[in-house]
Every structure is written in C-alpha cells, then in structure tokens.
Length: 296
Image (spheres, rainbow, N blue to C red):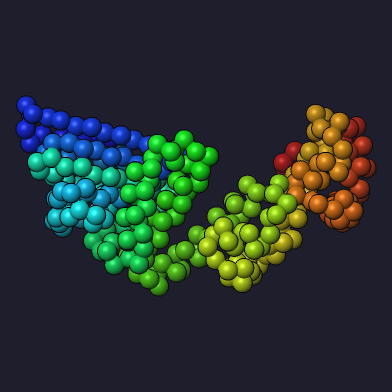
C-alpha cells in the first residue's frame, strides 16, 4: 500500500523481514536499522489498507503519531496501527518488531471504537494475552504455519483482536459487541461441522468459549431452536446428495451417516416429516424428475 519511507542512514541500511500466513491473518517480523514510515490521507485515498496492525517491539522503543496523539512504545507494549488513518512512525538505531495483521472487515468494529481503543489497549483484560499470542505466533511460526491448525489460529487471532479492541474501549460495550457478532459465527461454525456426528450444543459452546446455557440464551433471543436447525440443515444436505446422479451407488444409510445421522430410523422419520416422503422415494423420484435448484 502507498506510504513514504525515510531512512535514518541511507548508506548503512540493514534489514531482515519475515512474513508467515495464518489463514486470513499474518505475522510480519522486521529487524532493521532506523527509519521513518509516513502514510498520508492522499496515499490512503489512492490505496486503502485492508488490515489492522497490532505490534510489539523487541528490545527497542518506537515512536508513533496517529489520531493526533504522539506516543513512545516500549518493548512488549501493544501498538495499534490503523492503516486507513494517517500516521507517522519512527524507529531509531537498530530495532525489531512483531506485527499481527488482521482484516479490518473481519474485526468488524466501528471506526470510533478502534480510534478510542488504540490509545488505551493496556486497559484491556486480554492485553497481556495478546502480547504472548503475538510472540508465540512469531517464535513458533515455522511449525505452526505448516500445520493444519494454521487457519484456525488465524481465526482465533481475529477474535482476540476484536476482544482486545472492544474491551479496551469499554467492557460493557465489549459484552454487547461480542454477543451481537457471536451468533453469526456460531451459524457458520455449525454449517462447517454438519458432518461431525459429535456436533451438539456442548461442543458448539466449547468451541466458542461459552456455556451451553449461554448458547441456548443466544438462540432463544434470535427465536430459533439450535437443535432443530441443525437437523434441518443436515436433512437438506442429505436430500441434495440423494438427488445427485454421482451418489446413486452410495446407500441411503451411508449418506445419512455422512451428514451426522447415527440412527437410520431416526433419519428416515425426520426426512419424511420434513419432505413428505421417504429418502428412498425421494431418490427414485429425483432420478426421473430434475432435482430442484437452490430456490426450490
């Protein structure tokens, strides 16, 4: 993205940079000689930034000016850089920093909340956790980014940044903001895990760090039954598979099990209740009549 770099010593420049990807998030570590980094409103207009940066310094002090405030950032002190607001950042001598980049849209917090929280990240109860999180994502980067957990760690990083900013802004606001954003994430999680026969309110609650009671309360406030919705989603996926020509050789039982049903009789009964005919009858009918599209 457009920015201006001014070197402290243009002759004796040394730098080493690493980037590790964690799904939609990434860690950027830079070790280098002194520089000044400037991003103006004109540069922002010509190339908006898609990321928020949460950084810590290693054994050095960085100087930041953003939102009309100048600050010196000591080692292991969190610094938030909003890439869509003008800033001036300086690092003298030789220094290093570790920076977590997360998508602004994924964080999903209003500009005023981010602006206010940037000046008081230390007030968040998860500030120390964030420092340790960034450090571990950096130190263990080679192993973590090559593992199957990389994308999940990125998702967890985005959640932690959201919690950091919201709670630094205001604890009561954080509770409301987290609750408002939690239900869509729960729905998305369920859709990704429909094939897991162990999917249940307890496992869903555990995956989101809440109690089953709180989970049911969220669903009740949205006026829907979690368990019935899961069954309906699984039935819809099974119905689609039964209608596919390439699934003709797969038994009805196997398709039911594929979508998390462990009891064939229960699957057949719920399928008939939902669609008015048995799974076998639907399969036979769909082999003659083209299966309906997504609009029914």
